Length: 144
Image (cartoon, rainbow, N blue to C red; front, side, top):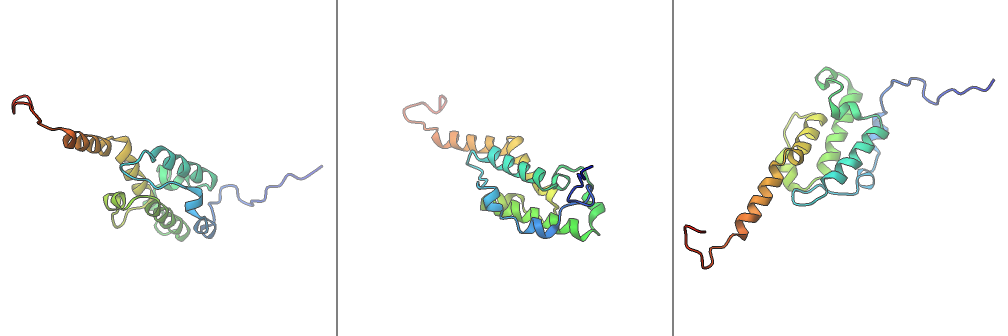
């Protein structure tokens, strides 16, 4: 009878922080998320695939309470790596919008996704564009 033993001794063990840290994020996520760009869904999809491929879903989807993991050095190392990935794949404007000391990877992920899924940022950009495109020209002030 042939053995079909897995190469992993513990199927429930998390990823190795060194392996995660060594991933070239710019090769794996080849887009920069920008507030004025239509890159959000591509950016999110690349990250979602990366999370699934490397068993990192718990860090961003809230399936594990990160406060309970503060004492776990492997967890915090991976969490810090994910935060760095987010910050190096977004524009400077978005960085300044979401950066906050003490956030974990989930908090940063939720903030970034909220900017696009809550439509606040998109509404602001569209309203700003509409405002600057509005000209009185020959209209009376009441019509304008």
